[in-house]
Every structure is written in structure tokens, then in C-alpha cells.
Image (cartoon, rainbow, N blue to C red; front, side):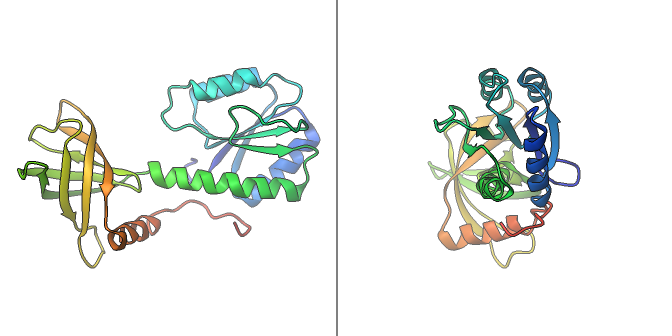
Amino acid sequence: MTPELAFECLLVSHDTRLCCTMNEVFHNFSIVVETCLTASKACEIVSERNPDLVAIDCDGDPSASLLEAIWTSPHRRKPTILGLSGDARPIPGAHFVLRKPVSKQSATESLKAAYHRMLLDYRLKTRYAIMTRLNARDADGRNVSVTVTDIGEGGMGLSSKEKLTVGDELVFALHLPQTPRAIHIQARIIWTREYGAAGCDFLNIPPADRAMLRDWLKARTQIKKPLIAV
């Protein structure tokens, strides 16, 4: 993600005509593109940075090493992978396949699916700081004082002076800023740190509260909008 909150793509191909078509389509999706001519150079880029999308021309230059580098990289969040190929067979490791020859229309349709996946991944992984102190209740009915440090679609971060253990379940009501009421959350601790920080995933949120959380998160999502309807 660029400082302007636009998705970033690494396009791997030495086909000038293909790159020209793809660049035009990427522009329509407000995706910033870096073009790389070889899979070996792309492996270096992937190890240093973590683009949101990698589009790989799988014809010609060997791409298996690049796909392996992406899936074995230390980055927790993996990019969406779009494989471009004239072969009708599936491409192992690619989320989507765009068949060649590529037209602006076919590329647009493939990018719509890839864009929605990137957007969902961004919403699931992004956390928004809130720093709200509250009392939670664990499975034994014990009150636990915690501070909710951040929250996202997929979970939240906590800090506490009390001991938190992986697997602990907490129940609490959280009032998000600018919302009419608190949302009720049952969460499970999935990691902890010695200095009192912990990460949680959600076990249960009532449907109306889940909708309120999603609306709150969407209002804070500021990804650069595509130039076309997606």
C-alpha cells in the first residue's frame, strides 16, 4: 500500500504489448504498478517489500521460483497472485488466472476478482487504534481489566497488567467512537507478549453488532477509489 493508500502491484513480464495493456487496466483500478522483466529480479523485490498484487507472465521466463518465494516469504500477509498464461491448465500457487492473449476487457474482469480479494484482505488485516479501557470477563467469571489498543474486521489487540494466556476467552462490551451504543464481543486470545500485549480473534459478535462494527471500519477505510465501477 502506497502512502496515498493505493494498492501496489508488481507486474513480471518482458512482453511490451502485454505490459501496455495491463498498465492501462491497473490505472483504471487506481493500482500503482512496478514492472519487472524477470522472475529472478522479482524474487529480490518480493523479499524486500510486500506488494498487494503480483501479476506474473508465466509463459517464457520460469515463474515457479517466484511463486515459491512468495509463499515462503516471512511476510505474514501474502499478496494476491494473478497468473497470465496461454496454457489452459491451472497455475499452482496463483489465486486467479488470466488467459492470453489478453484484452482490456478480459484483464478488467480478472482484475475485478483480484481487487475484491485485495480489499477483503486489507479489511481483515488492517487495525485501527482506539485505546479504550474496559472490564472483560473470562470463562471462569473473573473480571479482567484490559485496554483495547486496536480493532479490525478479523480481531483486535489488547494490553493488560493482568496475566493473559493463549486460549483464554473474554466477553465484554466495547463502545467505539461515534457509535450509538456498545457492541458485545466474545474473543479468544491467540498470542501474548511478555510486556502485556495480546492479540485476539473474534468468536462471536451478534449480527447487529457485527454490522455496526463493519460500518465503523468502512467509514475509516480510505483506499484510493478505482476510476471504474467494481
